[in-house]
Image 1 (cartoon, rainbow, N blue to C red):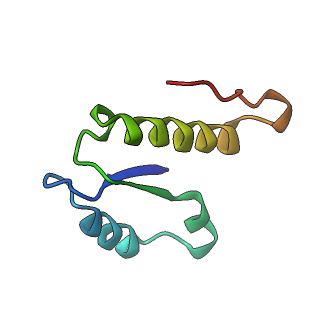
Image 2 (image 1 turned 30 degrees about the horizontal axis):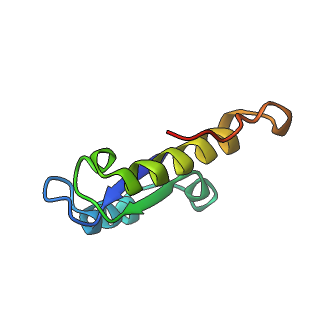
Length: 79
């Protein structure tokens, strides 16, 4: 699970996300499967170019680490 949180998000505040994730009844050995990225942006972080670049990089890494063997990793590209 990848969660993208904007520090200035009034709809889904990052601290509420942390609280919710901490309260989930997930076994400790599966908690490593939850990843959270934080952005200096609001709810639609992708409209702020620096956050879009970070979002793309973070999510691409998440996908590569989660579903693709190292030999099939998607190369980085500009958004």
